Length: 166
Length: 107
Ligand SMILES: Nc1ncnc2c1ncn2[C@@H]1O[C@H](COP(=O)(O)OP(=O)(O)OP(=O)(O)O)[C@@H](O)[C@H]1O
Ligand SMILES: [Mg+2]
Image 1 (cartoon, rainbow over the protein chains, first blue to last red):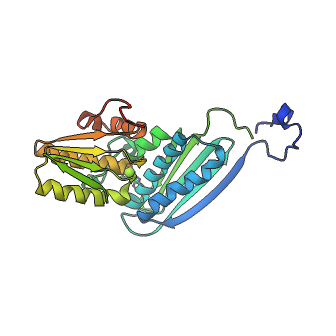
Image 2: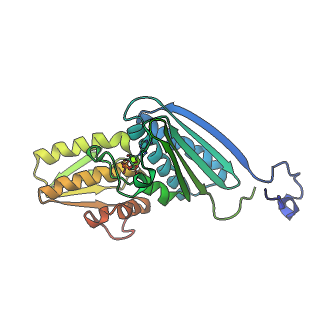
């Protein structure tokens, strides 16, 4: 873990440093897998990340990625059945990590599923771009899935181009 | 509900503020009903009020493109913000849907 040397800078000499060296925070959400919750989920994550002072662009990137993962859980994971989706978010330093998980049907071949334009549901007018957009708008996307057990999509993104300052 | 304007075979769809899986179906049905009953040569998606779109929007546009292409019509997209433009490029939709030039009236 990195040592905080901010207390040595002039502006902060007055204030005793009560902040931990690395900023940490986390939250967890559970909600029904219905399409009404797609908007709720992305807005909730956007609200959580505001403490990182993100740019408008960064918020929009994360909202898009969350929307993709949640929509996939609803349409593919639970195939329209109403069950539970969970999102956990954490902040470590200036990195935001978002994990979207379902206990749905799972993905038989993750590598193939992540290829741009791959979709198992063309009849629903899916374009097969969900994972490609998650990868385009986040720094890192990793998928763990077990057929019959469920899917877990973890996405990470560094927020802000300058190191965190309080 | 999205607003639709019809003028000499040109149909303009004013895409709502958010276009996701939740509302794509309704917009799709609204457009298809008109495409099936009216003479439309050009279908234009106007994104001037759209702040959010995900891959559900790409699927909806692609589906309408296929319909228009089948009847020999064209599809255009105007007032795209940078993110929506990037999605159109990444998905390859830009090859078949005419987009206005970079930043022209965009955000
Ligand atoms: N949570 C999930 N559970 C089960 N299968 C999934 C899940 N997420 C994705 N998949 C599978 O991976 C494929 C690719 O997903 P991706 O989001 O890239 O495209 P899509 O959802 O089919 O289309 P689009 O996102 O463009 O509407 C899906 O078609 C589906 O087969
Ligand atoms: Mg998808």
